[in-house]
Length: 162
Image (cartoon, rainbow, N blue to C red):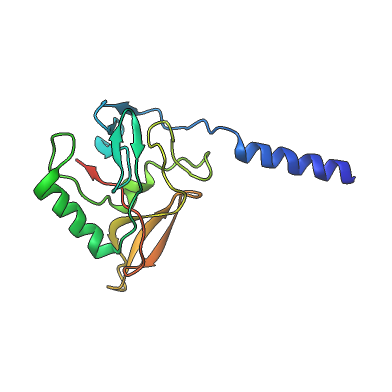
């Protein structure tokens, strides 16, 4: 009996650590640090905000920020820098950000070959709580679930464009 439990736990642990085989195969790598999702017609930055796309890798540190600062950062980014020749990047809606989660994957729950070096924590959405002006939705990439968060909490940002 004890051997069975140990073996079962070993198999579960091995399964969690095994390379994830993502379900979403609708991604087209544009080659400029962006991914086009053919199912949703959205273009995503491969790297989280604060990182740079160099030599086919996300380099640097992603930045945590409060919700309002995330919106301002996207606006600043568009007004001054842009990315991949575009200046219409924004925070995704809850539905949009949930669309890139991979429920088969864990820690992070995302396709790492398309979105490399994604941290296994929360990312802001533009979706606000309908009952409180102090909260907005995040997607937690540890397991791909969504939660309400106080807007003054600091989470990461991944920008998208239509």
